[in-house]
Amino acid sequence: MQMPGKPSWLGTPISEVEIDVSLVTNLLQEQHPDLAYLPIRLVDAGWDNAMFRLGEDLSIRLPRRQVAATLIENELIWLPQLADRLPIPVPKPYRIGQPTGNYPWRWSILPWLVGVAADQQEPYPEQAKYFASFLRMLHTPAPLNAPQNPFRGVPLHQREVMLLERMQRLETKTDLITPEIKNTWNQALNTPIDVLPTWLHGDLHPRNILVENGVITGIIDWGDITKGDIATDLAAIWMLFSRASAREQVIKEYGDISHATLQRAKGWAILFGVLLLDTGLIDNPRNAVMGERIFRRLLEDGK
Image: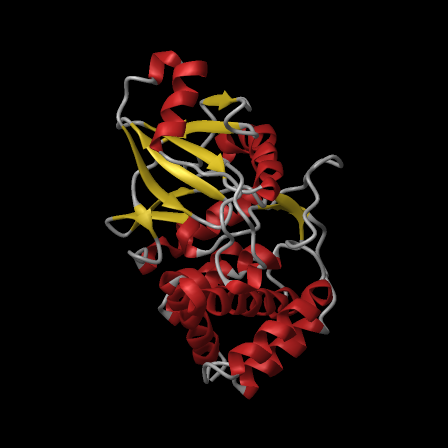
C-alpha cells in the first residue's frame, strides 16, 4: 500500500510502503522458505529502512522509500568487496530478496551483529584506536565506478543552502547555534579539499555504530557508501566520543590529518548536528540528543 510522503524537513520521512511482520513473513515464504520458520520481530525503522531480527543469527533490511532502494543496491554490490578487509564487523549480505507484487524493491538478509546503538551506550575511550584503525582501512582508493553520492563526501558549499536554512530555524529553538559554531562552519566552508577521494561510509552517526560492553562490535547501514572527502567520515569523532582525550586519540591514531581536513571534518560534524537536531526536535528525541551532543563537543574542543 502506498502512503503519502512529506518534506524531509518535517522530521522523519513517512514510509512509502507499509512494512510489517506479515509482509516479511510472506516474502520469506515465497523466496527463502528455508528461513520462514524463524521468529521475526521489528527492531527499528530509520529514515530509509526497516530492520527486523530473524531468529538469533540473522536480520532483514527493507527499504522504506524509493530513494533507499537505490542505496541498498550500492550496499549489495560494494559491501562484500570491502567487508573482509575491515577490522570491525559489517553486515555483509547473506541472501538477497527480490521485488514482488506486494513489495516493490530488492531487500537483504544479513548477519545479526550484536550490540546496541552507540547513542545508547558509548564506546569506552580506549576504543578510539580501534575506530581510527577502521577509518584508515576503509579510506582507501575507490574504483572509477564507485557510487556517487550528492550529499556525502562532496565540497561543503554544495550543502550550504540546506544547512543555513535549517540552522536559522534552529536558532529560534535552541541556544546551541553559537557564534563559535557559525565561525567553525564558515572556516570549514572556505577550506578547500586537500586529499584524494577514498571510500567512505558516509553516515557514521552513532545509531549506525554498535557497541557491547563498551566495545565497538559493528558498523551498519552502508546505504550512503560512496567515494569522496574523508572529512565526512571523520566527523564521527565528535559524534561518538564524549571525552576530549578520546577524540584526540582518534586524530592521533588515524595519522596524517591535515589542519584543513580537520577543519572540514568539524564542518561535517556541524552539518550532521544540524540535521539530527532539526529533525529530532520535530519527532525523534534520540536524534535531537545526538545533535546536541555534537555541538557541545565541538564547543568544548574550541575552548
